[in-house]
Image 1 (cartoon, rainbow, N blue to C red):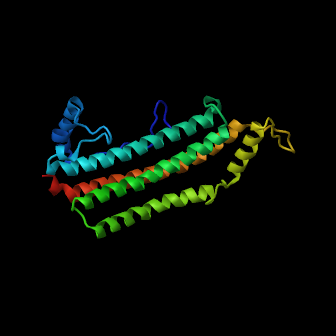
Image 2 (cartoon, rainbow, N blue to C red):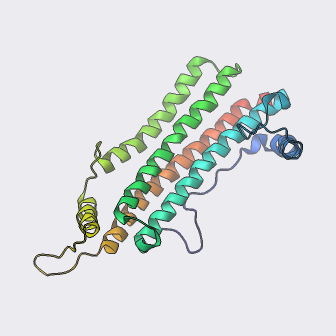
Image 3 (tube, rainbow, N blue to C red):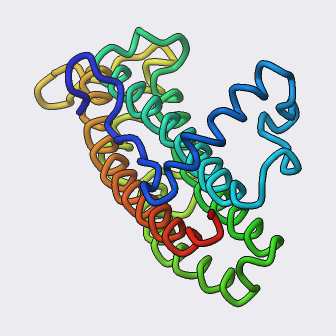
Length: 239
């Protein structure tokens, strides 16, 4: 769970040190000057390729790839934070707490899927500029997908490859949540105990946050390794 006064469970990515000097000395200044002089492409929010020297392209592409991934991790952190808030104080949000829980989880999976697309864009850019061939792109994508598909299998186990959500915690959430939405309370038939929606949400969010956080940490480590590996492979082009 989140430490007090912190909103990040997933740590930041680190820019590869092997090409960091070029980013700091050259590209950083061009980004700042681009903002001042209006050179930045407002459609893509990036520096036009013709404004960069050839040796600056690799550090910039890796920076852009890293920045896009960081954006996804930021979103995943916010979703995990919202799940924790929902589990502790469902009235902090408007609308159905039950529906919000499933919306947050589905949004998490949608964001996570962007890692695959972002990596494909990076590889295709390298291929387009003749730095790697089609075979290398195919092999690199396959290696990534082998790891990525493990996460997707987690998703399939959670939602059972359908619109239905499996497991007793989901059954309880839907039974009590839908009953409350219709104006009914749910009591234990034997003890007469009231099933509180907040208690159910607290239990299920703890389960899901733990699963989703673990997978995000794994993906963060995979992407950090890829960043460092590609920077090392391509460093000679950044001279």
